[in-house]
Amino acid sequence: MTEQPAPPEFARQPGHLVRRLQQIAVALFMQEAQALDLTPVQFAALAAAKQQPGMDQRTLARAISFDTSTTGGVIDRLEARGLLRRQPAPEDRRVRRIHLTPEGEAVLEQAVPGMLKAQERILEPLAAQDRERFMRLLGRLVTRHDSPTA
Image: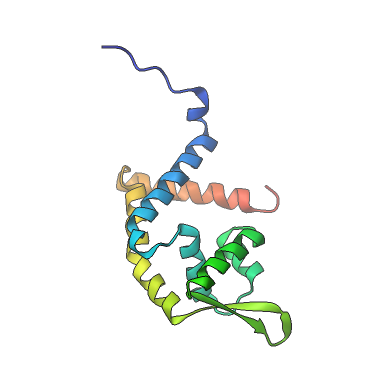
C-alpha cells in the first residue's frame, strides 16, 4: 500500500480552511434551498429586510457584511424576482427604502427550515460540546476582526 502524500502547507493554514468551510457552507445551503433558487446572501438580504423594514441599501449592506455595490446587485436580482421592492424615501427621494413583498415573505419562510438544516449539517462532524466551543471561538474571531481596531 502506498503512503498518501502530506497535504501542502497552505492546506493547513486558517485562511485556507476558513475559505473551504465557507465553500462547504454555501454548497450545503444550496442543497437545502435548491427548490427556492436562493443563495445564502439572498437569504440574508431577505432576512435583514424582514427584521428591519424600510432600511436603505447601505444599511442592508452593513447588516449582511457586504459592500454596497455587491448588495445593489443582490437587491436588483431579488427585486426582479418580485421578492423585494424599493421605494423612494419621503424625506429624501434619492434614498430608496427596501421592503419585502408578500412573495418575499413566503420564500423566506419556506427557506428557514433548509437554512437551519444546512447549519446542522455544517456542525454535524463535531460533538455537541465541540460545536458550542467552535461557535464561541468562531464568534470571537469574527467579532475581533470586525472591530475598527483590528
